Length: 108
Image 1 (cartoon, rainbow, N blue to C red):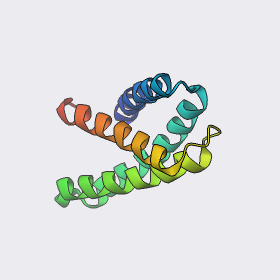
Image 2: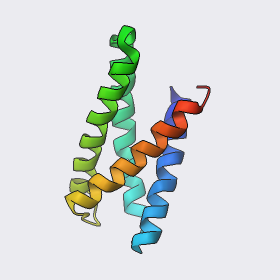
Image 3: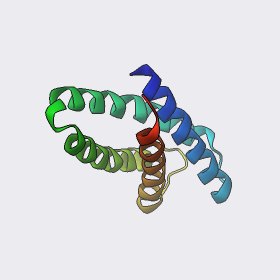
Image 4: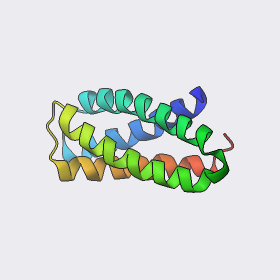
């Protein structure tokens, strides 16, 4: 579980760095917020997958959608950069698609 968290943090951290570079914004605060949020949401994901293991794929997809929405809101609210909600939704979507897509193919 710690391994998957580290992989998620690495992948999503790269997305935050790319986003910050493109938008010409400092990345430090967004990285900090991303790490805090990911620790929280990964724990929720692990618990959901343990409870509903018989419905793994359905649970995974539903949880990822919920995580995307929660992370979007929290990035919007917690970031000192004060990302608009639409920018936070976009950033969170990119982060989660990258980590989900790459993670799907990793032997974890």
